[in-house]
Length: 124
Image (cartoon, rainbow, N blue to C red; front, side):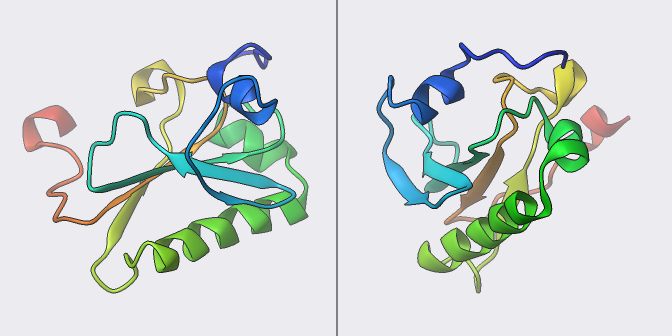
């Protein structure tokens, strides 16, 4: 990813230009249900800061924002009753990582057995 695109869909959601089905919000984080869920629970968690991907977030976000982001993921997993049964968090980065929106975000997926992360033929 290169420079941050202020017109990406998550930036528009953060500005209130596009509605979302909000699950959680604090000073640093917004989380909402995915509009095309891939599991019974599919929540997107985004920082409110302008970060293109996980590398940008890790390098440039203040400690408070990083802590709030991870605490939000844990809280959402508990509130969605995923802690005991298990869940997956995915952060895609860049073209090869399958990132579609150039704003750092994590997918929380759960509510059913999700199977292997990658099929063995894809991992080769």
